[in-house]
Length: 89
Image (tube, rainbow, N blue to C red; front, top):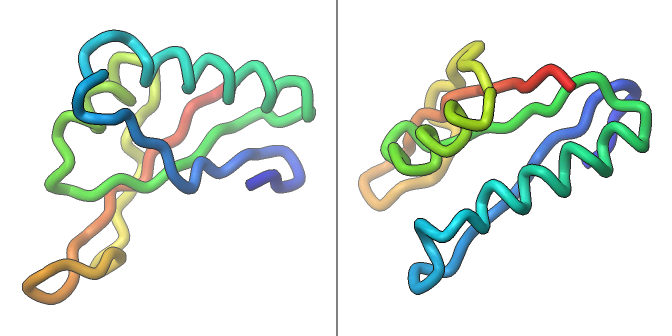
C-alpha cells in the first residue's frame, strides 16, 4: 500500500514447499525496486511476534524493529502482538 513517501507491506507469503530457497528475498527486492520507483523513502510492515522465521528474513534483509502493536492480530486464543519494522530505501 503506497503512502506519501512510504510503502506498507500488507501481506507476503512463501508456500511451505518453497521456503528456504530465497523467494522471500526475491519478493522483498521487487517491492523495494517498485517502491523506489514510486518515490518512497521507507518500507513498513507488521509481523506476528510468533513468526520468528519471517522476522529473521526481514532482519537479514535490513529491516529494523521500531515498535510493537499490542493485540494487533486475531489468534486462536484471543489476540497476538505485532512487531513493527521499517526499512530505509
